[in-house]
Structure formats: C-alpha cells, structure tokens
Length: 270
Image 1 (cartoon, rainbow, N blue to C red):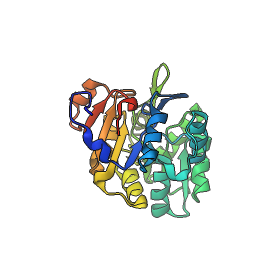
Image 2: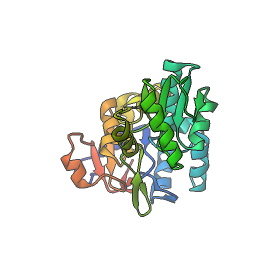
Image 3: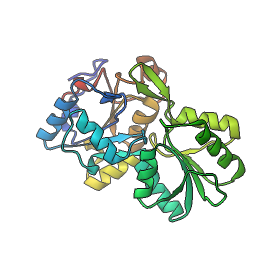
Image 4: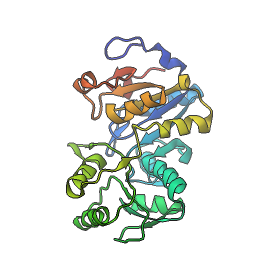
C-alpha cells in the first residue's frame, strides 16, 4: 500500500490500536463517510482494537454511542471513546477535587462533568476555583456575557477543552472552541490553557489502559495542528485524511508532518 504521495505504507498492517478522530475523519455531522464500517470490521477481524478520540465535547460519551449507533456503528462501549471532556474531568478532579468550578458548554457536556463527580455552576459566582470553557453549540449571548464576567472579575485558573478553530459541517465549517476563546481573549485579555489535542493525553491514556506499545498505535485525523500533532507528541504514527479540515497546502505549510496522507479512511488498507 502507498499513501497519497506514493510513500510505502505497508507498516499499517502491523498496527493493532487504531485511534480515530471523529468530525471530518469518520463523518460530517450525520453523514458517515464511505469505508468506515468496512475498516472497523477489518480491525476487528485482525483482532485489533479501535477507539475514537475527539476534541468535540458537545456530547457525552453516552450520547456519542447513541449517535454512532444511529450512523450504523454498533456494539460500542465507553471504552471505545476518549473525549476532551473526559480529559478535562481527569485534570479537574486531580487539580480541584470537590471545589466549585464555573463551566460553559452544552447540556450534555455539563451533565458529563457532573456525572463524573465535578461540582459545576453555570452562573456567575465568586466562589469558583476555576473556569472551564467548551465548544458550545448551544451558545447564547447570556452565556458569553457570564463567561466574560467570570474571566474579568475572577483571577482563577482558566481552561478550555480544545483549541480547534473550526468544526466541519455539511456546508463548510462553524467556529469551534479555539475561535470562541479567541473572542473571549479580545474581550477580557485572558487566554486559556487548552486541554485536548494536540496534547498527547488521550493517546497515552488509552495506550496505557489497554497495554499497547507506541509502534503498535496509529492515529487517524483530519487536522494537522490537533490530531496529527497529538500523535507526534505521543510518539506514534499518524495518517492525515483529506476528508475534513486539512488541505495539502496546510500539510505543506506546517512544521508538523503526518507519517502518511490519504484522501479518506476508505483508502486505509490493513
């Protein structure tokens, strides 16, 4: 097998743990890309394992399972996922324990935090010990005002789930968490610590959980500065697919290089 540029990609047959981004990689909104089901079946038949690592925190893991079942991917459990929301839970439980935190995000995101034991408020308060902002497809003017008030009046740690500038949709893209936080920075002069990819946390956590070595792992994604960068930071091989955000020019212009480039997951041969 060769990649888009003719590079030998035969080492893909030696991979055992396949970590997929979601938006722009295996689907766009409610459209599952061609070849996804066949690739997942091939991984299962070779007794490999796959998981989905996404910077999109708008859905809880339970809601993601429901969405993928609707798209035709069945038999999934919580072990098949690691989201930026889950990474945030890990960090916040370690750093803030039972402390009150202010969080902005979708209803599903807030419930995910609460179900995992975090004490959360969505209202302005002086009692919060930290601020967490997520990509929010339910954003309102009041939410933005409250977050700006929290950032302006409280000198406390400020985190955000992911640095993605845009999220793919069927007509193009919409602003993601990175763009939202850039707006907040212009308004409040405060920038967050980003949690999700390109940090290697999701990859390294899953590798450790299931006992895989770096040479056995492959990360597949459509963004150079998050998906591919996280794989590079974790020291594992990567595939950048051209079905989402990244273009060939983006890849050429970036200092971060994927191991392989393919048009889509349909072209992955294992």
